[in-house]
Length: 186
Image (cartoon, rainbow, N blue to C red; front, side, top):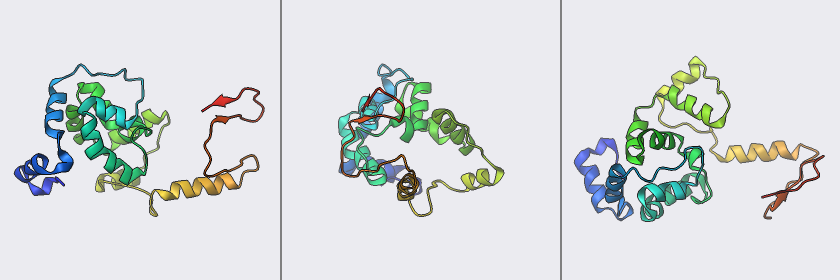
């Protein structure tokens, strides 16, 4: 896989010869030149739709889908590009190009990144000096026990609620909150 430590020519060679990157460079070049595929910024779209629109379905299936599946264990056609790639979505809106948005995202400071995510989630994340120092010292951050901690803790909290009925292995087709007569279709 390309990495800055391998140098420009080795990275270029990987992009040109490795099957996983098939079609990536021509698609990136087309994206760089073509600014007609802009989407209304207020509309979220799946990762699959976002990457396919900018780089084509082949790049999405060969490169992005396996990476996203490995990290999030989710379907690229179901996961939100706004939540997973907020910097790229902002970069696309700002530059009208995914490639320029990617380049632009490299220059975003950790504080700006946290602020952007706060705006995206419509909440204000408090950033202490200690957290700010830690963010500047690392390239990746996650839960100590892995991302599964999030689901485990959520299940634990929900099991403690009297008004929650957990059902696994079943498809949710509707929700009906207490005190509401109207069913919400999923």
